[in-house]
View 1 (cartoon, helix red, strand yellow):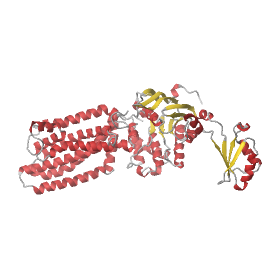
View 2 (cartoon, rainbow over the protein chains, first blue to last red):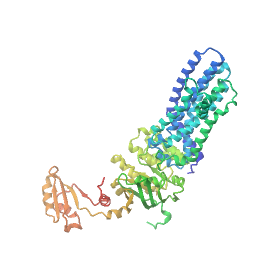
View 3 (cartoon, helix red, strand yellow):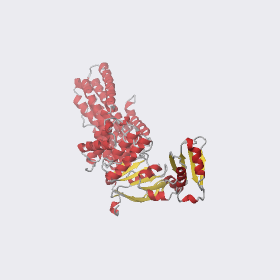
View 4 (cartoon, rainbow over the protein chains, first blue to last red):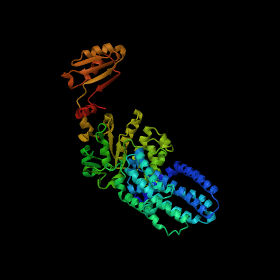
Length: 264
Length: 324
C-alpha cells in the first residue's frame, strides 16, 4: 500500500465530499431552490423595466448580486458545517486518524463547498444572457460576476471552515457564520445604498462583500473599465489570502477532536 | 513461544499523562504490547481508557511522557496513523454511504489505488460478515453491523496495531459474540496487536492475553490476565440446580458435608446455594465436595455455577468499587 500524501489526499476527500453533496441530494436541492429564486427575480426585472439602457444594466447587476449572495451563502453554510458537523456526527475522529495532512482534508472540503458556488454561477449564466444581451454586456458581466463571486466564495468558505474548527458545536458554527454574512451584506441593502462619504467609503472597502459588489456595480451598471476600480477587490483578496494562509499553516492545530479555543 | 526482543514491541507507553487544566485524565501510564497480543484496557467509565487510546493513536497530544507505536516514535504521527487501525468509541458513520463505498473511501485515504481499495473493501466486508449488505446505505445498518463495519474500516490499511474502543458497547449478546470473534481473529490470523478498551470484565477474561487495569487515570495493575486471575481467591460459593422432585434429597445430602452451608430458595426449590464456612477444612478442594455428595446420593446436577473467584473479584478488590 502506498502512502497517502497531501497531493492525493485532498483529491480523495474532495471527490467523496462532492459525491456526498451532489449524489446525496443536498446540492441539487439547493440549486433547484436557487433557480426558482433567480427565475422570480429575473421575471420581475424583465417585466417591470422599460427598455432603456441603464435599467437593463441594473437588471443584470441585480441578477449577479442575487447569484453572488446565494452562492456565497450556501458555500459558507457548507463550510461552516465542514469540521463542527463531522465532530457532531461522530465522524471526525476517524478522519483525524487517517494519514492525510489536515490541511489536505480541509482543502478537499473547501473544493466541495466551492462547487456549490460554481453551480450557482452556471445556473445564473442564461439569466444574465436573457437580461443583458440587448445592451451587450453579457460577457463583461459574467467575467466580473464570476471573478468577484469566486473571490468572495473562496474567502467566506475559508472563514466558514475557520469558524467551524473553533466552534464548540455545529449550531454555534452555523449561527456565527450566518451572523457574519448578515453583517457583511447588511450595508449593501440599506435603503439609501451603501454609506456615503470618506468614512462610508472606508467601511465599504473594508467589507469584502460590500466592496466586491460595488466593483461589480461599477463595471456592469456604470460601465467603468474593469481596471478602473480594482482597489475594491483588495479586501476580498486579502480576506481570501489571510484566511487561506491561516488554514494552511494552522490546520494541524486547528482541526481537533474538540471545538473551542483552549482544548488540547 | 520464542524469546521476545525489543524489536517485537508494537506498543510502548512510557509515563503517559494527559491533563486538562486541573483535571488529570491519565497519569503516568506505562505498558508494552507485542504482536498477536490482545491487551485489555479495563476500567470503569472515566477511568482514562479512551484518553489512553487517543494518546497512542495521535489524536491527542500527551501532557508528559512518550510512546512508540508500530515502531514509530510519537513525533512521527503520520507514520503511526499509517500503521494503526482504530475503532473510536461511539464512532459515527455517514448514513448515506454504502458499506462498500465507505471502506473503499478509507482505502483510498490510506493511499490505495481505486481498484485495490475496492478489492480490499470487498474482502473486509466478507471477513466481517457484511457481504450481503455491502450495497445498502449505512443508515439501514443495525448497531452491531456498524460496529463490524467500523472494525473493517480499522483494518483497511492492514495495521500493525488495532485499537478498539468499547467495540461491544450497546450490542446484544449475539452481536458481542461476533465482535469478540473478530477481535480474536485479528490477533490470531493477522498477527496484529489488539488494544481492546472495555469496561466489561468477561470480555477481558474471554479474549485478552494481558490486561491494563485503569482507575481514575492511573494503572492499578498491568500484566497477563492469568496473573491477575491468580490474585483472585478461589470460589467459596456456588449455585446448584437439581430436579425439583429430588431437591429435598439433594439438600439432605449436602447438609451432611462437613464445612458446607446449604440454603434453599422458597420460590425456586430446584435451586440450592452452597457456601464454604469461614474456616472450612475443605478450602483446598473448594466446592467439589458438594458435587461428590450429590453424585453419591444419585441426584443429577442440572447446572452448577461458581460465584466469585473471577476477574470481577480482582477488579473489585483493586478498585474498591463494585463491578458494573
